[in-house]
Length: 437
Image (cartoon, rainbow, N blue to C red; front, side, top):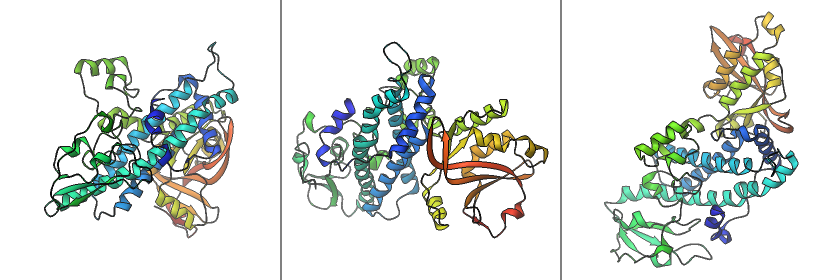
Protein backbone atom coordinates (compact mmCIF):
# COMPACT_ATOMS: atom_id res chain seq x y z
CA UNK A 1 0.00 0.00 0.00
CA UNK A 2 1.46 3.31 -1.14
CA UNK A 3 0.40 5.35 1.90
CA UNK A 4 1.57 2.66 4.31
CA UNK A 5 5.00 2.60 2.66
CA UNK A 6 5.14 6.40 2.68
CA UNK A 7 4.41 6.62 6.41
CA UNK A 8 6.22 3.43 7.43
CA UNK A 9 9.65 5.04 7.72
CA UNK A 10 8.40 7.12 10.64
CA UNK A 11 6.37 4.60 12.61
CA UNK A 12 8.90 4.57 15.44
CA UNK A 13 8.23 8.28 15.97
CA UNK A 14 4.46 8.03 15.77
CA UNK A 15 2.49 8.20 19.01
CA UNK A 16 0.01 5.51 20.05
CA UNK A 17 -2.85 4.86 17.64
CA UNK A 18 -5.63 7.43 17.78
CA UNK A 19 -8.78 5.52 16.86
CA UNK A 20 -12.42 6.52 16.92
CA UNK A 21 -14.76 4.57 19.17
CA UNK A 22 -16.05 1.16 18.09
CA UNK A 23 -19.60 2.55 18.06
CA UNK A 24 -18.58 5.35 15.72
CA UNK A 25 -16.79 2.99 13.30
CA UNK A 26 -19.81 0.65 13.35
CA UNK A 27 -22.10 3.57 12.52
CA UNK A 28 -19.91 4.60 9.57
CA UNK A 29 -19.71 1.02 8.27
CA UNK A 30 -23.49 0.58 8.46
CA UNK A 31 -23.93 3.81 6.49
CA UNK A 32 -21.49 2.76 3.73
CA UNK A 33 -23.03 -0.73 3.56
CA UNK A 34 -26.58 0.64 3.41
CA UNK A 35 -25.75 2.85 0.44
CA UNK A 36 -23.98 -0.01 -1.33
CA UNK A 37 -22.19 0.07 -4.67
CA UNK A 38 -24.54 2.74 -6.01
CA UNK A 39 -23.12 5.46 -3.77
CA UNK A 40 -21.66 8.42 -5.61
CA UNK A 41 -17.91 9.09 -5.24
CA UNK A 42 -18.83 12.59 -4.07
CA UNK A 43 -21.34 11.36 -1.47
CA UNK A 44 -18.98 11.57 1.48
CA UNK A 45 -20.00 10.04 4.79
CA UNK A 46 -20.95 13.18 6.76
CA UNK A 47 -20.05 11.70 10.14
CA UNK A 48 -16.66 10.44 8.98
CA UNK A 49 -15.84 13.64 7.09
CA UNK A 50 -16.62 15.82 10.10
CA UNK A 51 -14.68 13.59 12.49
CA UNK A 52 -11.59 13.53 10.25
CA UNK A 53 -11.84 17.29 9.61
CA UNK A 54 -12.14 18.02 13.34
CA UNK A 55 -8.90 16.09 13.90
CA UNK A 56 -6.98 18.12 11.32
CA UNK A 57 -8.44 21.44 12.46
CA UNK A 58 -7.48 20.56 16.03
CA UNK A 59 -3.94 19.75 14.84
CA UNK A 60 -3.75 23.07 12.99
CA UNK A 61 -4.95 25.01 16.04
CA UNK A 62 -2.48 23.15 18.26
CA UNK A 63 0.44 23.85 15.93
CA UNK A 64 -0.32 27.55 15.54
CA UNK A 65 -0.83 27.98 19.29
CA UNK A 66 2.54 26.35 20.00
CA UNK A 67 4.21 28.74 17.55
CA UNK A 68 2.92 31.65 19.67
CA UNK A 69 2.98 34.08 16.73
CA UNK A 70 0.85 37.15 17.58
CA UNK A 71 -1.82 38.55 15.28
CA UNK A 72 -1.87 35.80 12.66
CA UNK A 73 -4.03 36.92 9.76
CA UNK A 74 -7.57 35.43 9.81
CA UNK A 75 -7.39 34.79 6.06
CA UNK A 76 -4.21 32.77 6.62
CA UNK A 77 -5.89 30.66 9.32
CA UNK A 78 -8.95 30.13 7.13
CA UNK A 79 -6.83 29.06 4.17
CA UNK A 80 -5.17 26.35 6.28
CA UNK A 81 -8.58 25.18 7.55
CA UNK A 82 -9.91 25.07 3.98
CA UNK A 83 -6.94 22.96 2.93
CA UNK A 84 -7.86 20.58 5.78
CA UNK A 85 -11.38 20.31 4.32
CA UNK A 86 -10.03 19.35 0.89
CA UNK A 87 -7.52 16.86 2.30
CA UNK A 88 -10.23 15.32 4.52
CA UNK A 89 -12.53 14.93 1.50
CA UNK A 90 -9.92 12.97 -0.46
CA UNK A 91 -8.99 10.89 2.60
CA UNK A 92 -12.63 9.95 3.26
CA UNK A 93 -13.21 9.25 -0.44
CA UNK A 94 -10.20 6.93 -0.48
CA UNK A 95 -11.43 5.07 2.62
CA UNK A 96 -15.01 4.73 1.33
CA UNK A 97 -13.88 3.60 -2.13
CA UNK A 98 -11.52 0.98 -0.75
CA UNK A 99 -14.34 -0.34 1.41
CA UNK A 100 -17.00 -0.24 -1.32
CA UNK A 101 -14.80 -2.37 -3.60
CA UNK A 102 -15.14 -5.22 -1.09
CA UNK A 103 -18.94 -5.13 -0.83
CA UNK A 104 -19.45 -8.05 -3.24
CA UNK A 105 -18.01 -11.56 -3.38
CA UNK A 106 -16.35 -13.26 -6.37
CA UNK A 107 -19.81 -13.95 -7.86
CA UNK A 108 -20.84 -10.30 -7.64
CA UNK A 109 -23.28 -10.93 -4.79
CA UNK A 110 -23.52 -8.55 -1.84
CA UNK A 111 -21.70 -9.97 1.16
CA UNK A 112 -23.50 -10.26 4.52
CA UNK A 113 -22.74 -7.20 6.62
CA UNK A 114 -20.69 -9.01 9.27
CA UNK A 115 -18.49 -10.66 6.65
CA UNK A 116 -17.92 -7.38 4.83
CA UNK A 117 -17.27 -5.48 8.08
CA UNK A 118 -14.61 -8.02 8.99
CA UNK A 119 -13.02 -7.69 5.53
CA UNK A 120 -12.78 -3.88 5.73
CA UNK A 121 -11.63 -3.69 9.34
CA UNK A 122 -7.93 -3.39 8.31
CA UNK A 123 -8.85 -0.38 6.12
CA UNK A 124 -10.62 1.33 9.02
CA UNK A 125 -7.75 0.47 11.33
CA UNK A 126 -5.18 2.08 9.03
CA UNK A 127 -7.22 5.12 8.00
CA UNK A 128 -8.60 5.94 11.45
CA UNK A 129 -5.62 4.66 13.42
CA UNK A 130 -1.92 4.74 12.52
CA UNK A 131 -2.30 6.75 9.30
CA UNK A 132 -4.50 9.37 10.94
CA UNK A 133 -2.06 9.71 13.85
CA UNK A 134 0.87 10.20 11.44
CA UNK A 135 -1.13 12.80 9.53
CA UNK A 136 -2.25 14.50 12.74
CA UNK A 137 1.28 14.74 14.14
CA UNK A 138 2.63 16.06 10.85
CA UNK A 139 -0.24 18.58 10.57
CA UNK A 140 0.69 19.97 14.01
CA UNK A 141 4.30 20.43 12.86
CA UNK A 142 3.31 21.95 9.51
CA UNK A 143 0.91 24.45 11.13
CA UNK A 144 3.64 25.45 13.58
CA UNK A 145 6.05 25.98 10.68
CA UNK A 146 3.45 27.90 8.65
CA UNK A 147 2.94 30.32 11.55
CA UNK A 148 6.71 30.59 12.09
CA UNK A 149 7.16 31.55 8.43
CA UNK A 150 4.78 34.47 8.83
CA UNK A 151 6.92 35.69 11.73
CA UNK A 152 10.14 35.20 9.74
CA UNK A 153 8.74 37.48 7.02
CA UNK A 154 7.94 40.15 9.62
CA UNK A 155 11.46 39.98 11.07
CA UNK A 156 13.32 39.81 7.75
CA UNK A 157 14.67 43.35 7.99
CA UNK A 158 16.43 42.54 11.27
CA UNK A 159 16.96 38.77 10.92
CA UNK A 160 17.29 38.20 7.17
CA UNK A 161 18.48 34.58 7.25
CA UNK A 162 17.04 31.23 8.31
CA UNK A 163 18.94 28.43 10.05
CA UNK A 164 18.02 24.75 9.78
CA UNK A 165 17.96 23.40 13.33
CA UNK A 166 18.72 19.71 14.10
CA UNK A 167 15.88 17.28 14.72
CA UNK A 168 14.52 16.86 18.25
CA UNK A 169 13.59 13.22 17.49
CA UNK A 170 15.33 10.62 19.69
CA UNK A 171 15.92 8.61 16.51
CA UNK A 172 16.45 11.16 13.71
CA UNK A 173 16.66 9.92 10.15
CA UNK A 174 19.76 10.48 8.06
CA UNK A 175 17.86 12.15 5.21
CA UNK A 176 17.96 15.65 6.75
CA UNK A 177 21.25 15.54 8.66
CA UNK A 178 23.19 17.03 5.75
CA UNK A 179 21.01 20.17 6.04
CA UNK A 180 21.45 20.71 9.79
CA UNK A 181 22.89 24.17 10.67
CA UNK A 182 22.56 25.39 7.07
CA UNK A 183 22.00 29.17 6.98
CA UNK A 184 20.45 30.76 3.89
CA UNK A 185 18.51 34.01 3.17
CA UNK A 186 14.76 33.74 3.70
CA UNK A 187 14.14 34.40 -0.02
CA UNK A 188 16.75 31.88 -1.19
CA UNK A 189 15.45 29.30 -3.74
CA UNK A 190 16.97 26.63 -1.49
CA UNK A 191 13.92 26.86 0.79
CA UNK A 192 11.65 26.07 -2.18
CA UNK A 193 13.42 22.73 -2.62
CA UNK A 194 14.20 21.72 0.96
CA UNK A 195 12.84 22.70 4.34
CA UNK A 196 12.07 21.13 7.71
CA UNK A 197 8.72 19.37 7.57
CA UNK A 198 9.11 17.94 4.06
CA UNK A 199 9.44 14.39 5.47
CA UNK A 200 6.58 12.67 7.29
CA UNK A 201 6.72 13.46 11.01
CA UNK A 202 10.01 15.35 10.60
CA UNK A 203 11.03 17.11 13.83
CA UNK A 204 13.60 19.54 12.41
CA UNK A 205 12.83 23.26 12.63
CA UNK A 206 13.90 26.69 11.38
CA UNK A 207 14.94 29.77 13.29
CA UNK A 208 15.55 33.31 12.05
CA UNK A 209 19.07 34.64 12.48
CA UNK A 210 21.58 37.27 11.44
CA UNK A 211 24.36 34.66 11.32
CA UNK A 212 26.35 34.64 8.06
CA UNK A 213 25.13 32.34 5.32
CA UNK A 214 26.67 28.93 4.73
CA UNK A 215 26.98 27.04 1.46
CA UNK A 216 23.87 25.20 0.33
CA UNK A 217 24.52 21.46 0.72
CA UNK A 218 24.42 19.21 -2.30
CA UNK A 219 21.45 16.87 -2.18
CA UNK A 220 20.31 13.68 -3.84
CA UNK A 221 17.03 11.92 -4.52
CA UNK A 222 16.91 10.45 -1.03
CA UNK A 223 16.66 13.94 0.48
CA UNK A 224 13.86 15.15 -1.82
CA UNK A 225 10.55 16.13 -0.20
CA UNK A 226 8.12 13.25 0.25
CA UNK A 227 4.72 13.20 -1.49
CA UNK A 228 2.20 15.41 0.27
CA UNK A 229 4.91 17.62 1.80
CA UNK A 230 6.59 19.23 -1.23
CA UNK A 231 5.15 22.68 -0.53
CA UNK A 232 5.85 25.43 1.97
CA UNK A 233 2.73 25.79 4.17
CA UNK A 234 3.87 29.29 5.12
CA UNK A 235 3.58 30.51 1.52
CA UNK A 236 1.12 28.06 -0.09
CA UNK A 237 -1.19 28.15 2.97
CA UNK A 238 -1.96 24.43 2.71
CA UNK A 239 -1.32 21.81 5.38
CA UNK A 240 -0.46 19.09 2.85
CA UNK A 241 0.38 19.37 -0.84
CA UNK A 242 -1.71 17.88 -3.62
CA UNK A 243 1.03 15.36 -4.51
CA UNK A 244 -0.24 13.16 -1.65
CA UNK A 245 -1.44 9.71 -2.83
CA UNK A 246 -5.01 10.48 -1.70
CA UNK A 247 -5.22 13.09 -4.48
CA UNK A 248 -5.88 12.28 -8.16
CA UNK A 249 -3.03 12.45 -10.67
CA UNK A 250 -4.95 14.92 -12.82
CA UNK A 251 -8.26 16.77 -13.09
CA UNK A 252 -9.46 14.24 -15.67
CA UNK A 253 -9.06 11.38 -13.16
CA UNK A 254 -10.59 13.24 -10.21
CA UNK A 255 -13.61 11.50 -8.61
CA UNK A 256 -15.18 14.89 -7.87
CA UNK A 257 -14.99 15.91 -11.54
CA UNK A 258 -18.16 14.06 -12.48
CA UNK A 259 -19.28 13.42 -16.04
CA UNK A 260 -17.43 12.45 -19.23
CA UNK A 261 -17.86 15.95 -20.66
CA UNK A 262 -16.12 17.56 -17.70
CA UNK A 263 -13.26 15.07 -17.83
CA UNK A 264 -12.75 15.47 -21.59
CA UNK A 265 -12.76 19.25 -21.25
CA UNK A 266 -9.99 19.03 -18.65
CA UNK A 267 -7.93 16.86 -21.03
CA UNK A 268 -8.40 19.12 -24.04
CA UNK A 269 -7.62 22.24 -21.99
CA UNK A 270 -4.57 20.47 -20.48
CA UNK A 271 -5.61 22.04 -17.18
CA UNK A 272 -3.16 21.92 -14.30
CA UNK A 273 -4.33 20.24 -11.12
CA UNK A 274 -5.71 22.79 -8.65
CA UNK A 275 -7.41 20.76 -5.92
CA UNK A 276 -7.31 23.51 -3.29
CA UNK A 277 -9.05 25.97 -5.61
CA UNK A 278 -11.53 23.65 -7.30
CA UNK A 279 -15.24 24.56 -7.28
CA UNK A 280 -16.29 20.91 -7.71
CA UNK A 281 -14.46 19.81 -4.57
CA UNK A 282 -15.80 22.83 -2.72
CA UNK A 283 -19.35 21.74 -3.58
CA UNK A 284 -18.63 18.20 -2.34
CA UNK A 285 -17.35 19.39 1.03
CA UNK A 286 -19.97 22.06 1.57
CA UNK A 287 -22.24 20.86 4.38
CA UNK A 288 -21.94 17.10 3.81
CA UNK A 289 -25.24 15.42 4.64
CA UNK A 290 -27.50 18.37 3.84
CA UNK A 291 -28.49 17.06 0.40
CA UNK A 292 -29.16 13.60 1.88
CA UNK A 293 -31.27 15.08 4.68
CA UNK A 294 -33.34 17.18 2.26
CA UNK A 295 -33.94 14.13 0.07
CA UNK A 296 -35.08 12.22 3.17
CA UNK A 297 -37.67 14.95 3.88
CA UNK A 298 -38.93 14.74 0.29
CA UNK A 299 -39.24 10.94 0.45
CA UNK A 300 -41.24 11.01 3.68
CA UNK A 301 -43.47 13.85 2.49
CA UNK A 302 -44.21 11.91 -0.69
CA UNK A 303 -45.39 8.59 0.78
CA UNK A 304 -45.63 9.35 4.55
CA UNK A 305 -43.76 6.15 5.41
CA UNK A 306 -40.76 5.77 7.72
CA UNK A 307 -38.19 3.10 6.87
CA UNK A 308 -35.92 3.67 9.88
CA UNK A 309 -33.21 5.58 8.04
CA UNK A 310 -31.32 8.60 9.37
CA UNK A 311 -28.47 10.91 8.41
CA UNK A 312 -26.49 13.67 10.08
CA UNK A 313 -26.64 17.18 8.67
CA UNK A 314 -24.93 19.45 11.22
CA UNK A 315 -22.09 19.33 13.71
CA UNK A 316 -21.94 21.57 16.79
CA UNK A 317 -18.95 23.93 16.94
CA UNK A 318 -16.53 24.04 19.87
CA UNK A 319 -18.23 27.20 21.14
CA UNK A 320 -21.69 25.62 20.95
CA UNK A 321 -20.50 22.47 22.73
CA UNK A 322 -19.04 24.65 25.51
CA UNK A 323 -22.29 26.67 25.84
CA UNK A 324 -24.36 23.48 26.07
CA UNK A 325 -21.95 22.07 28.64
CA UNK A 326 -22.50 25.21 30.76
CA UNK A 327 -26.13 24.09 31.01
CA UNK A 328 -25.06 20.75 32.48
CA UNK A 329 -25.22 18.61 29.31
CA UNK A 330 -22.11 16.75 28.17
CA UNK A 331 -22.62 15.80 24.51
CA UNK A 332 -21.69 12.24 23.53
CA UNK A 333 -21.55 13.32 19.88
CA UNK A 334 -21.39 16.67 18.12
CA UNK A 335 -23.58 15.56 15.21
CA UNK A 336 -27.32 16.19 14.77
CA UNK A 337 -29.25 13.41 13.03
CA UNK A 338 -32.51 13.61 11.10
CA UNK A 339 -34.55 10.39 10.93
CA UNK A 340 -37.50 9.61 8.71
CA UNK A 341 -39.48 8.58 11.80
CA UNK A 342 -39.15 12.04 13.36
CA UNK A 343 -39.83 13.74 10.02
CA UNK A 344 -43.08 11.80 9.84
CA UNK A 345 -43.90 12.92 13.38
CA UNK A 346 -43.27 16.59 12.50
CA UNK A 347 -45.45 16.45 9.38
CA UNK A 348 -48.30 14.41 10.85
CA UNK A 349 -51.90 15.29 10.07
CA UNK A 350 -53.24 16.46 13.43
CA UNK A 351 -50.58 19.15 13.63
CA UNK A 352 -51.53 20.25 10.12
CA UNK A 353 -55.17 20.48 11.13
CA UNK A 354 -54.25 22.72 14.08
CA UNK A 355 -52.13 24.97 11.88
CA UNK A 356 -49.11 24.16 14.06
CA UNK A 357 -47.09 21.97 11.69
CA UNK A 358 -44.17 23.00 9.51
CA UNK A 359 -44.24 22.25 5.80
CA UNK A 360 -41.67 19.99 4.09
CA UNK A 361 -40.14 23.10 2.47
CA UNK A 362 -39.84 24.81 5.87
CA UNK A 363 -38.17 21.72 7.32
CA UNK A 364 -35.72 21.62 4.39
CA UNK A 365 -35.00 25.33 4.87
CA UNK A 366 -34.08 24.60 8.48
CA UNK A 367 -31.78 21.75 7.43
CA UNK A 368 -30.03 23.94 4.88
CA UNK A 369 -29.74 27.02 7.10
CA UNK A 370 -29.26 25.57 10.58
CA UNK A 371 -25.88 27.30 10.94
CA UNK A 372 -27.63 30.68 10.70
CA UNK A 373 -30.66 29.86 12.88
CA UNK A 374 -31.18 31.32 16.35
CA UNK A 375 -30.32 28.66 18.91
CA UNK A 376 -31.64 28.25 22.48
CA UNK A 377 -31.28 25.81 25.36
CA UNK A 378 -34.57 24.76 27.00
CA UNK A 379 -33.66 24.55 30.70
CA UNK A 380 -36.88 22.70 31.60
CA UNK A 381 -36.61 19.87 29.05
CA UNK A 382 -32.83 20.04 28.46
CA UNK A 383 -33.47 20.23 24.73
CA UNK A 384 -31.91 22.47 22.11
CA UNK A 385 -34.24 24.74 20.14
CA UNK A 386 -33.52 26.22 16.71
CA UNK A 387 -35.79 29.00 15.44
CA UNK A 388 -36.54 30.25 11.93
CA UNK A 389 -38.85 32.92 10.58
CA UNK A 390 -40.50 31.78 7.37
CA UNK A 391 -43.67 32.84 5.57
CA UNK A 392 -44.49 35.37 8.29
CA UNK A 393 -44.39 32.71 11.03
CA UNK A 394 -41.86 31.63 13.65
CA UNK A 395 -40.97 27.95 13.58
CA UNK A 396 -39.09 26.03 16.24
CA UNK A 397 -37.13 22.84 15.63
CA UNK A 398 -36.38 20.68 18.66
CA UNK A 399 -33.18 18.64 19.04
CA UNK A 400 -32.73 16.24 21.96
CA UNK A 401 -29.10 15.76 23.08
CA UNK A 402 -27.68 12.27 23.53
CA UNK A 403 -30.73 10.57 22.04
CA UNK A 404 -30.66 6.80 21.50
CA UNK A 405 -31.25 6.35 17.77
CA UNK A 406 -32.24 3.11 16.07
CA UNK A 407 -31.77 3.52 12.33
CA UNK A 408 -29.69 2.36 9.37
CA UNK A 409 -29.64 -1.15 10.80
CA UNK A 410 -27.85 -0.19 14.02
CA UNK A 411 -28.23 1.60 17.37
CA UNK A 412 -26.17 4.61 18.40
CA UNK A 413 -26.33 7.72 20.58
CA UNK A 414 -26.26 11.19 19.04
CA UNK A 415 -28.25 14.41 19.00
CA UNK A 416 -31.56 13.92 17.23
CA UNK A 417 -34.14 16.17 15.63
CA UNK A 418 -37.35 15.33 17.54
CA UNK A 419 -40.12 17.54 16.25
CA UNK A 420 -41.01 20.94 14.85
CA UNK A 421 -43.91 23.34 14.99
CA UNK A 422 -45.13 26.91 14.74
CA UNK A 423 -44.62 29.15 17.78
CA UNK A 424 -44.52 32.82 18.76
CA UNK A 425 -41.39 34.86 19.34
CA UNK A 426 -42.55 35.82 22.84
CA UNK A 427 -42.50 32.11 23.76
CA UNK A 428 -38.80 32.00 22.91
CA UNK A 429 -38.21 35.04 25.11
CA UNK A 430 -39.31 33.16 28.23
CA UNK A 431 -36.79 32.74 31.05
CA UNK A 432 -36.56 29.00 30.52
CA UNK A 433 -34.86 29.55 27.16
CA UNK A 434 -31.15 30.44 27.29
CA UNK A 435 -29.91 31.89 24.02
CA UNK A 436 -26.78 30.17 22.69
CA UNK A 437 -26.52 32.16 19.47
